[in-house]
Length: 336
Image 1 (cartoon, rainbow, N blue to C red):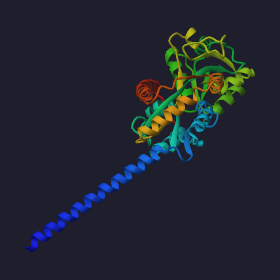
Image 2: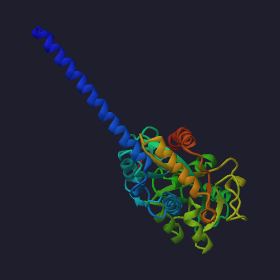
Image 3: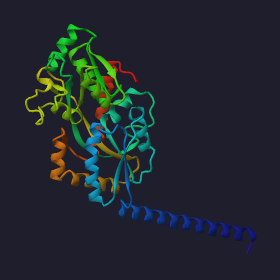
Image 4: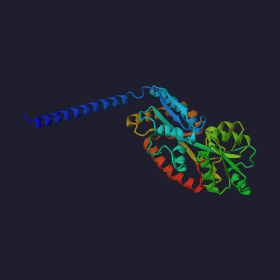
């Protein structure tokens, strides 16, 4: 046999051997991945909360993840990473392995407000995550120190216009839901109110109760105990309809036509998380929210349940980005 033919056949054999080896390795990897997904979860799931403990989303997600943990047979922990207005914790989720063992518990500020506020962030609200589901809408209320002379949102507008630039409002920081909610109110009414940003909503609530700042807008779940204790008074409910928890309190839109504001909490996973894992998590969430005791507990804190799955959440993020872009641009809102 000529030498060159022998070499050719040897090369062909080596190529076939290489292709066979690659095929076997791919099959093994696929089988291992499929087996891992079938056995999911087989260890603790970490849920990163890029907000302070005691925030609206934190209050919402802790009992829900506990119930999901029971359904899945594995622990689900929550780690609060509130630095950088929420950007640090959110980026950590985006950069985590897409294996279903790191999730993000976000509000719409993380996904629709901050991306419009900061020129450069370490995540893309659409491309960096795989949606699991919106969990609940979060009712907001406008509250004031009991000494504030007004009793309605319309009173706030009147007083602010009588004293231009003299009426402050508190928030959890630039671009926070408390800031955006009041900025939308300012744009609707023309009330010359002045923003006082704090490092977190809890500090803002504390100073409103102390009378350092007269008013703010807040998640009902955060301020309801203080309202019941008489430490805050409510000027209006920000949602379309009155809250069953405050049936005698008018909505803000009853005195300021067209105004409405609420936020939502959601669960997401890193980009590339498999559909099988997303489906299992979505089903676990839906099962958790069928628990009547859990539902009643959270309804009594001002949450409205709307777990509609990944596609709905993806659409909400896209719509929210467009809406918040206009609000932030029109308000000239800048980062801290």
